Length: 190
Image (tube, rainbow, N blue to C red; front, top):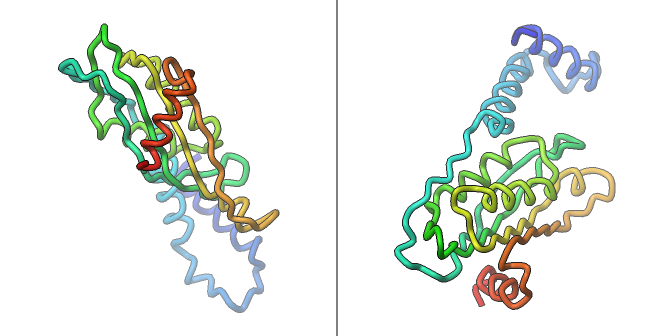
């Protein structure tokens, strides 16, 4: 389907949804809305389908501690309602002492960007981030990902409640409760 066909179909749907006789909306005011919406969806909200994952690694220079990046902001679209959900991702990993690698800090934020810029379920996004790190050339000894988000599909419709959903995934050393608790304390800054 060509873009113009898509724009025309969107305009028809929009006008049908609001009603052709609505006196509040002048059709000229929304004339460019379909183009703006299509551009926003393809260039921003759904751009993760076109992005490559790049987890460039570096020598850890013997670093043995936990590496944490917390408060990575994201916005995504709910797969079920195509409404936004947004929040923060915190990622912890433990470098593998045999491979001796760490990943560039910006790469963790970019990884979140790739998966959040797709139609998503928060649970799936959490798992995808953890799996990608775990299976990468980083080859960490452990990975932990925690995502906390507010879902507009829950806040604007249905129960109309803006509670925050928290999901987590752990791999390797983070299966140990003490290691997991240490990461959670560091996520909270305690």
